[in-house]
Length: 291
Image 1 (tube, rainbow, N blue to C red):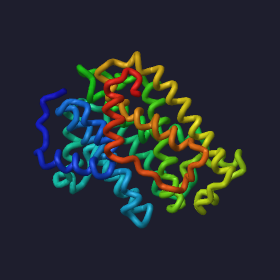
Image 2: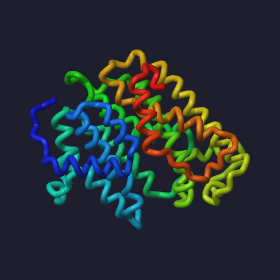
Image 3: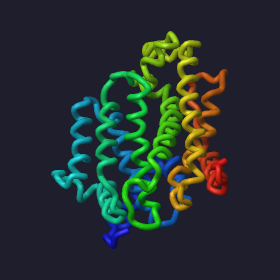
Image 4: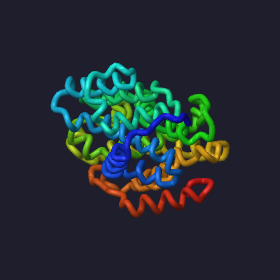
């Protein structure tokens, strides 16, 4: 960690409150690390919140593209106006400097999130995995770099472990959000997977829990469970200091099991309580296998 001066505590408090309100899973996971790295992790999570919510705040994709470009310009040092009064931008730049973080994963995340601005369906599983690598995996890699005991390169966390964890977390999130994304005619379930089971995007958009759609979702959940098994195999070889970066896997384990219930209606929203989230993370933090 460098000796870079941190922004004032108001900016840090703003980021913490934003993440606690908009992404409680990531907020809760930061409670199991020290104060200094926690501030940087919250800065990264707050940046992610800002990027994720852009599609909900704009009425036209072009406006969303402009907002995404502003964040990209910020990372490149060419943003024009607004950064000095933006607490998330201030905290993000501090975290990048203080922990010597590469900006490439953040740029890749921004680029991948352009998909969220349009109504193009996710074409296939390979494209989905690339998307999850960029949007979820990049944050995992950067979190590991914040938690590293000494400066090192971007390979601090084994790339295979980060990839597996990103697929697990991402699949759980996209299936849980199916009712909301479907209502926006946004499709993250791969289109070719739907077709293979005799389903279609229109069934998702109409909110019809047909057997064909259930079968397609079941296959996608099985992909997540397979990657979860791989992530568990990678855990023992992960340095102890970096394990908290993968702590959300404990939540994904329970979520995938719940989402896989055959009687479950995929269009009926289910919220995990904050108490259940904290309990699962606390138990996992004390278990070598995140149980």
